[in-house]
Image (cartoon, rainbow, N blue to C red):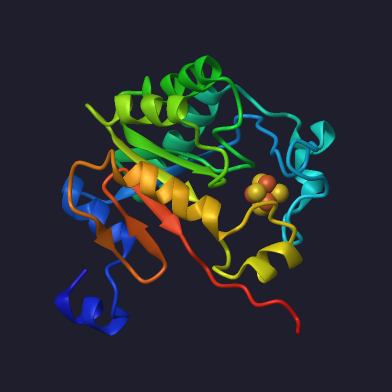
Length: 211
Ligand code: SF4
């Protein structure tokens, strides 16, 4: 991206950060590893966030879901053909991608990272679903890969979070960010909608309730 485009955007795009870091454009391969969410299964709440399509958690809607490695291979093949892409990040996007015992998470993440063109992981999750053993696992992968943790927030206002049935408040997000930040080795890199703390990225889109 040219300097002109950067100044027009007034923020540093995540894609630019990746391009600088890997010296080529890096593409995301979206993975559905079959997770559910504590805000859906009753552990935290039921029904999920108001904007979340909970039908997507139904087994019927998720079929046919293939193994993580097969999803990676398919995504890499499609993006390579379409964009001549060479490097990829496995994007664990559907549902809460840290909501499982750590050994299961290890197996799923490693299954994706086993592909030679995968340079790292993006893991989307909730701020109340990142216990220390999960952070240990993610930190482990930062030794030789890029790791990005997406912590959904949606609003900094607890009243808005209650309205949208998020099942957590701002305090949970701040706690998660604080615990992640202690593990970050490099200086944070920021953009308008996402803070990238080398291996910790945080979405913070403000959503207003209808009052
Ligand atoms: S936390 Fe995420 S996955 Fe869970 S219900 Fe809300 S939007 Fe859906």
